[in-house]
Image (cartoon, rainbow, N blue to C red; front, side, top):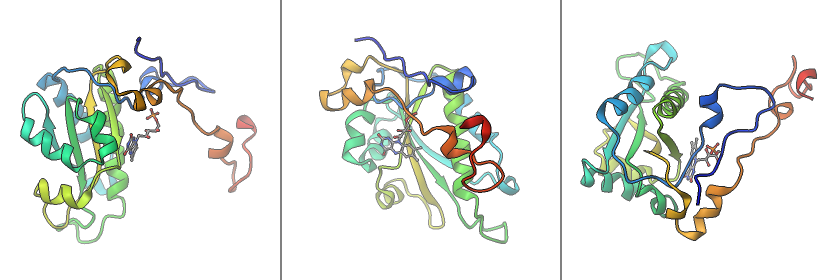
Length: 204
Ligand SMILES: Cc1cc2nc3c(=O)[nH]c(=O)nc-3n(C[C@H](O)[C@H](O)[C@H](O)COP(=O)(O)O)c2cc1C
């Protein structure tokens, strides 16, 4: 079974890396070289953030290097995610600090900025031949405890990182999803002209 072509079908041209990003479930049994992994976190590090607070931290575990740590993160995922995420090269939990101690006030952009750092990481991953599958489906309280995340810090999202594999490695019940074409709502529903709801002439 070939690796599916999940490239976005776009109304306007977009960068190849953006078009070819998708969230796979079939991962190859392959470790990520340390310098490549370093590039992913370096990309996240250079994401913009409100007041340059950089309110992101990543608890990570590589399957081939830290099987115990990997199992700890895996155990926090919902069962439906564990089925496929157990084969990823790396699992991570992204963590934020909504009220930084020395910043004087709450950071209303903490979660937003983590999302932006994850977007940087995702696209750098593509540039290095890797794919990310983010997951909201994990137990936050369990993650807090199992990973010793201190009070005042919040687990935001988990993610599986790895190289693509042939979908035939997946159990049948989730293989179909791997082969389904990607879809998006039209720009006409997402971009308004001047006032809320007003159609934009270029995206009708
Ligand atoms: C915050 C967030 C949470 C997500 N949670 C899950 C999840 O728990 N399980 C899963 O299989 N996919 C999850 N996804 C992946 C989305 O379903 C996926 O990004 C979306 O369907 C679009 O597909 P694409 O990434 O292949 O373009 C999540 C994605 C994001 C950004």
